[in-house]
Structure formats: structure tokens, C-alpha cells
Image (cartoon, rainbow, N blue to C red; front, side, top):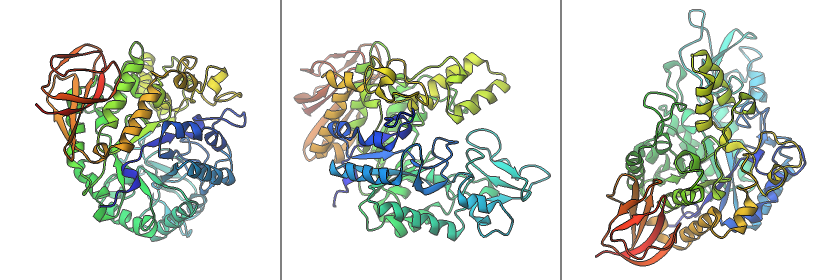
Length: 541
């Protein structure tokens, strides 16, 4: 079987608003990204997943698109975008565009037409319904809080929005909608992009009248039609955001014979610190045994011939992993390396979120004025109405809020971390004098060089891409596994705690491949140091 390039690739996600400002307005932009491509080349990544840069009024930081074929003026122009694609290609880096196909902005030309009258040609591009008993059509709720239906007095009907009321849902049952979308996708393919990340793609098959949102009955029909009309016969990578996916559902998306997507993002592992029966804001300590179980399930159930994994700890919607499941104070660098080693030696395509490679931490706030994220702001107000205290709600947001990931990238120990010489759109993490790219590159023991070495190991060793996964039975706080391929066996051992842990094995170490402490010499009666991690090639005894 021919190896698709994305199976051995490592993807780096850029949140453009927070990467680098080049024109002094406090907002990251496309020219800013171009200025740091050599840094990403040094890291060793193969592709950049670019969060949305399309024209947008920015109700949801660009995930509310008003024109798919234009660039947000804050980020630059289409000429800048063309220059980014070309400059990245010169460095053998592909650009993965972030496509939002479930909804548009209410300022998109299609919606502005749609709301004008009941018989407008664009009316059926969106989902409109009459009231039920003088109230909303049904009980569907918005992810951002409140009803998913908003009344529009222009035509006395409600429109559906599974997110902000400024993000009306497209009606994928309409053939014309689908054809317009496919034409737009081909516009970007012709520009030379390397693929697409498909935002909340599991929602496009919704049946709102039956209150079915994700994994609707026509979802895979739409994806196969889209693949045939756009991705087929192009060397592209596609990854779908699918919150409700199980391994069996993931195979429907990613089995090569089905011609849908390259891979999906599933979130089962990343939801393990959420209280049962409650939303994401109610967190609980991570049960490491559950993490091992979930990761093992995905590693062993998706194989190269029937599907493909994506591997990630962080993205623009998630808190920083070193603060979430590591130790962001005493063992920040060591635990960040442990988390990297654990994930990057698994089977699948790894994703690095900007700042993860230097061990960037969460940024707690003590006042709502420091927040910018619509989801956090909406939750703050609704939670206070429901009786929670300000301290409780801010604590929840400091643990799980999206602004943790969206603060500007710290490049050096200078004003605003070198991100801008203007006024940044959101404050930087206050640790930027210590945690920044220049400091990381200057220190050979920094997290950056662990990521760089992990990427090199993946590129140079087929066992990382294709090897079988086999969990090792250990104490709960120790997460260890084997990778086996063509007579070679690697053992990956991690201590997922700040306390020493005993690990015992009769395996013989042939070669130490990477470690975050000194190299182990024997695996018998080995006391792992806090957050210790290593990869060794072994022979069984």
C-alpha cells in the first residue's frame, strides 16, 4: 500500500490572531506567520493547520465566515495568503485550511439574502421554521448557551444556529448549498493548499425537526459526495472534527475504501477530566487508568487498512496540557516532555498547537474583563444566574476556558513577548519573560528540542508510523506501551505523576532513543522519577 504523506507527517496548528503581528495593530496576521516559517522548519513539522483567516465579523474569532473566498482584513489580503502558501511550499510545508461548513456568519451574502423574504432564492440555504405554540420550534440548544433558535421579525420565522446566533446553520439537504460549497473548496485546492480541517463536520447531517444534530443519517452520503466532487484525485489531507466519534464511527469516516476523510479528531480522551453528566466546566482529577484504557482502545481499533488516528493534547479550544495534566510549576519542562513523548510515539498523525512545543501554560484571570472568548463570557453570565459564585466560575474558566490557548505567542523577553509593538488584542501569559521561543532555542534541554527529536524519530522510523501497539500492565500512574514492527520492539515508559513510581521489566535495553532525564541502564526495579519518560529499543528476555 502506498503511504500517504500525512501518515508520517506532524502538523502544527497556528491561531493566526495570536501568532505574530507584523503591522503594529496588536493582531497576528499572515505576514507575521511568513516571518516565522524558518522557526517551524527548524522544528521539523510537515504542515500547518491554519485556523480560519477568511473574511469574518469575528463573533467567534473567525469561525463565523462572511466570505469563504476573501481574507479577513485584520490578517491581510489574498496576495498575502498566496505568498504564505508559496513560502511554505519552498520549505516543504503544506498549508491545511480550516473549513467551517456547518454554518456561516449572519453577515454572509447568502444569509442576508435568505432572511429577506420567504420566497427568496437563498431562503432554503438555511434552516427556517415557524414557532411552536408561540415559542421556539423545539428544544434544541446552542453549544454557546440558550436556545438554538432565534426569531427573525423580518419574516416571522426562527432560524437554527447550533452555535452563536450570528452563526446560522447551513441547510445541507439543499443541493445548491452543497454545490456552492464544493466550488469554494476547489477554489482553495487550485491555490495549492495541502488539505482541510473540517470544523464540527459531524453536524452537517442534522435533522433539526427530529432534534438530531451529530451523526445524522445522511452525513456520510454528504461526505462521500464532497470527496468525489473535490478531494478525489488530489494529494490532500482531510481531518474532521467529530466530538461524538467512537472507533467504529471513526472507521466510517476514515476507511480508505469509503472515500470520505483522511482522519478525524475524536475527543474521548480529552473529556476524561469532566464530571459525569455535567458540561465541560465541571472538572475532576484525571483518572490515569481511564486514559490508558481510552488511548489503548483507539490505538488498537484503528488500523492502517480501515482507518487512521489523529494524536493531540491541545488546540485552540482546549486548555494548555502542561497545566491540565502535567505540572506547570516545579516540573513544567519535565512534565511537558513526558506528555510529548507519550503521545508522539503512538500510531497516528500528531498535532502540535502553537506554544505547546515550548511548554506554554494556562493563563489564569481574576476578572471577567480579561476574557475575550464568547463561550467563556456566555458561560460566566449564565452560571452566575444559576447561582454559582464569581470565584467558582472564574476558577472553572481558568481551568477549561478557550482563552488559555488563544493568548499571543511569546517570541522573546521583550515588550509583549515580541508578538507586537502595538497593544495586543488579548494579554499575553504573564510568564513570557521566562517562557518564550528565544529562551527555548537557547536551552538545549528545553521542551522544543524534545519535540524536534520526536518529529525526527517519526520521520526516520517506520515503527512509529506502522508498529502495533501493546499496552504494558503497570501501576496506575505509569503509562507504558510497546510498539512492534518487523522484528523491532520499542518500549515507551512514562510516569504520569509527580511522585516516584516503580517500573519493572525483564526486557533488555538495546538502545535509548529519547528521555527527559538521564538514560536508563536497566529496567529491573527501576524507580521512575517524577514525570519521567523514555523510549528504548529492547529485546525480550
